[in-house]
Amino acid sequence: MAYDRYVAICKPLHYGTLMGTRACVRMAAAAWATGFLHALLHTANTFTMPLCQGNVLDQFFCEIPQILKLSCSHSYLREVGVFVFSACLIFGCFVFIVLSYVQIFRAVLRMPSEQGRHKAFSMCLPHLAVVSLFVSTSFFAYLKPPSMSSPAVDLVVAVLYSVVPPAVNPLLYSMRNKELKDALNRLIQLLPVQQH
Image 1: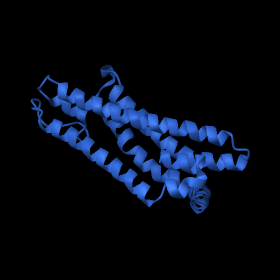
Image 2: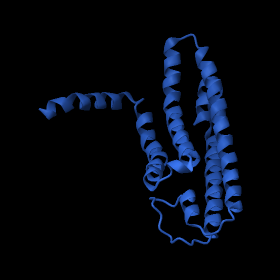
Image 3: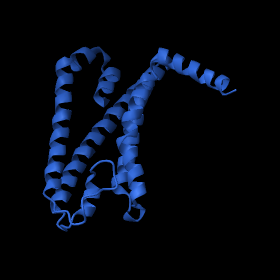
């Protein structure tokens, strides 16, 4: 998404060639393959750990830090290696997104037209909002101090970063649709009438 926004705003005349079907398929395939390999690495590592404290998690999905709490093996070296690999992967994506948006904002702020700047910002800000929500909640989930860790807090944070961004994403993008905005405004105007 960041690269798409970058090309659309910074190189609009080359958009058709840079973001053609072949480029989109390659980027999607790279994202899917990386995600699959990352998940496979975590899964293989998790299944080789012995669990001594049962197999019941206070989560709605098998999250790695929760599984580590059940493990009786104190040799976390493999898991640290997987986390380092994950951190490098996430950091690389984060740097790419930040660099893309720095270039986008530089290009937008140089636009002479107020309407053009507004249109460009309205195209970029939903993506940036969802990415920021995901990154901030993920960082809090994995980097919070152990003193703040409790089953309730861990569950709330897991919901925040795994459910909320995907649920909010379509809503934010569809708010650019004028028909949807009009329908939402009509719905909001009807609410006070129905409450009486």
